[in-house]
Length: 285
Ligand code: PAF
Image (cartoon, rainbow, N blue to C red):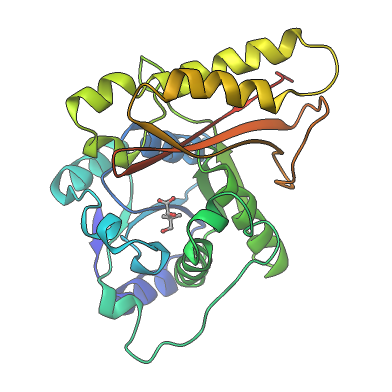
């Protein structure tokens, strides 16, 4: 496995690389969810086909609207490298800030429809930062396939749109959310949960599942008011603070009140300072 730390080295490697390349962009603190993104790409490689798998590790400062969140983002470089090696990653790209963003950098990339609500509204500038770094990674690595996790449902919709609108010749492979045995969606931020918070965190998914079951038995309209009320009952005595809870169409991210196979119940909440997101499809296809 090759470790590349500069853009110059990456560009040289890529210009000499005669096989197609797959990419998993990450911010490190790798867990099974990230490995499942690698697996999703690796499982698409045909028996006699040669492709390279690049995994990038870069904590992108441009996508953090909260400096405290950036300062406390978990870092585990040595473990990450070991996991990549075991997973059969070919290249780990781990640039530093001054290489990624020169002091006079002034270009931004904004998605203007899918990013206005939900996390986009709650974390101003977040998706501009994501679009910028993802575009840079696409330009440098020139992958033909990339994998992203469905846990970040808004990010995945926006990147799909970025690929379409900027005509990147890239296939996006969307991978199901990987969960701990108790249902908590895997996230690098889970490492920051205190023991008591971690013990309560599975309630997030349990509550989404209960709401799904309630709506399955309802007949017509999706009842976000009742879901909200039930969630408040569970969350308020605990340390959870809901940032948003709503039902949206998975592709358009527009509010969705009638029964639809793409209806997604989405939730962002704080446990102390730590912001967690999760979602559930209300109807199985
Ligand atoms: O999902 C993430 O970890 C980040 O938003 C990404 C896509 C690696 C961009 O920094």
